[in-house]
Length: 358
Ligand code: UDP
Image (cartoon, rainbow, N blue to C red; front, side, top):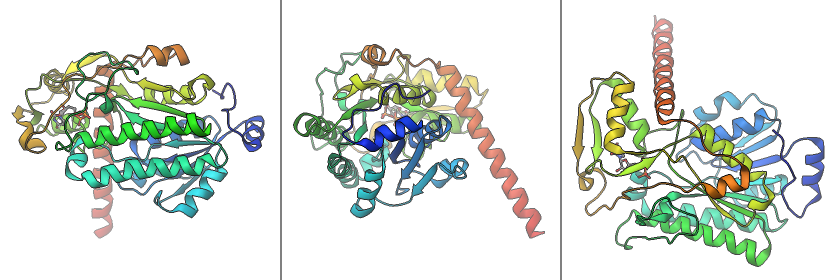
């Protein structure tokens, strides 16, 4: 699928590239879970992709299969490298800013890093892009709705955050500030920006290392080790397959009327975490026990969770004609298959290593 129209940036290069049949995308956080899937799709449709990633939560493994593409370039570096960032932004037609500190565990454990990475990173990108008014597509999060219980969340809903003494909310606050900053660049400096609020996104290549529930549950189920529910398990989430997320992202990036807008992107099939544990166990035919631990033990004393998180995706549909489609059952099967393949791969590698040692 080609972009329907070139994004509205004040530059002639973008028109030239568009006429030549491709665009050049810079993806920050491009070796991450979502970034690597986006890069794959853009390369597939003939675009040029430059990845910038400091591998703080991303991994070279995620992009290994893309490295042979002549249309891919990658830089394992920080956004703080101003010179490099200026050059990469200059060469790009569209900047997709995905680099961020993610995962509730990481956020609770490293709040300074979370705030600095999110706020400073976005500020640098917007500042660099503003020089030639490059389109910036920036990822925010459903976390910004905080403790609002009025689901489904519409983009114009109030953000209800907890006190600053509870570390968890620093993530939502830092991403809300990113949104304000991006929208201010649009309003005040006419920098074209699109803000997308991603709801829980899952799929192959997502690591459970930073606390994400679905890869953790599937991994435990496949190992027949205990599946651990934090809190009562009555809290709910909606899980969106990464392929749907990428489709939504690409359509939004190609939609001129999305510029200056904040748009939710997620699946609307809601499930409690307790039911998710049972569903994962059932679909993987696992004999895992299901156990509960209090939030205090899982995160930190006084941890506050979001009880429900359901997106309204009417705006996404009105702008792009797209709604995420993949069912939760299919998502669980895909994630399980990914872990099985990965384990097989590791087993093969260790066999090769043993054979070589012999
Ligand atoms: N959770 C859980 N067990 C885990 C990891 C997470 O019960 O091993 C819970 C977590 O407390 C939250 C929900 O699952 O209520 C989703 O957590 P995740 O970190 O995936 O994303 P969040 O939606 O909180 O950003």
